[in-house]
Image (cartoon, rainbow, N blue to C red; front, side, top):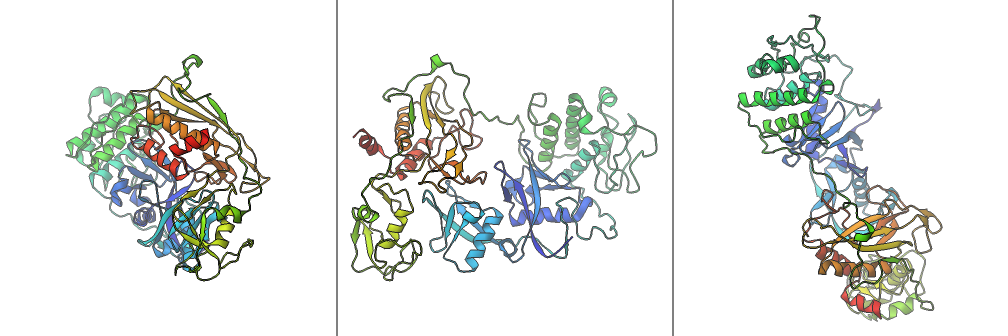
Length: 608
């Protein structure tokens, strides 16, 4: 046992292998059910704490979250954090995503940011915990160290997460009520709302424990016999179901019974065979079980919803789909379950004879060309083309070193050959910085003769990236994307092999991985789709499509990652947000390309 006090945060595991925290209110709700132990039934309906989470239920015995409308199951865990850290103070750190809404950081990241904030550090570098970002507290921004892209961040106050003191269990198992070794208290009366009655009846039918009884599977009553009433039994309609439902059903399916009495399970000594669990029942039995429970709810006046595709093949067990539909109807949710949508990443097979070149674009393949910085140009000479000297600096901060422009530069790294008190203004955007800081920023970048304003991202010169060598293929296939039925599809195939990092990469001489290649991406073969392709080819030539860094999805470092230009990798669906239909995608990707300095003017420059 660990003798300590802690803030308890309940978390779920997403598809990228990262533990995401539930909000404080939801964690309080889960913790209350977990502390109540088996008498609470072991199931947590998250919609009772947050209406947005209505489809989700947590089973504390298996420590899994189940989504009722899709059948998705994810692990959950109960984590402990220092009560003086962010969750113990109700502090939540969030970043602004592409849709303009706010996403909370993982708990360990939020705690790291809050610790630096409390120490009044001007910024915090997250590379120590596997992320290539810097949080600037002065501007409340998150800066990608490789791409220099900036996002807004915010700090807000919420409820304090649940606090526990004394002995904390090392395991994450359930039940986790305090004082588990003490004398058990008498079970509290079970809830008699229709939803909880149904949950207990489902568990009884599956051979699982119910709230007031011991953890023994009750024996099945003889067909046609009346089921006994327990101290917290189901309503009479549920009892009647055990002896009716048609002669064929009574002969072939187990009857539903209420929970046994507090003294022990019903029929414990009658010599009958134990009731089979759900896993032992065949398809027809499972269907009848779900339909029978629906009839009980109809008889008791609980609103129900139609449940479709119970006989079809689906990742969700047919009986499970039926049961969850009934549970949702018991909560009054207007939901109709259908077969879960399928992820369609690739088009149907295409023969070589059906693949066509794209009119107006020569060739169907392009390899990375590594453009070197112009030799003989010092950083000072490069910056001189874009800067104007400022004799009387304004009374404001340099956003690179965060020191006043009237004071010398606060940059502490390798010292460039520029006086630290000189100040310059960028010609196009007019933002002012220490020359010392700009030279240092240039030396830490790609040193390709271009410069990007760290404040407004205006690009001076031709920006290039650090994309490793690879190949880009592109052609037309005779299939249409969802939302673009009037045209064929442009397929792009990126292929980058693993290799060794060069001098322009984060860790020169160290090997890097390339996961998920070849990567297939799709554009509609429309006028705007072809325009996007032409600009993507420019981005490829300038080595801006990919970079080497830390994956935001897996946390792996020294691997090939996307470089802020979004691609559509789902052909026939949009379950991950990377597919079609998406009416704004082409405009959005044109804006992202423009942010990298790639516009229609770039096409003319490439021809020159």
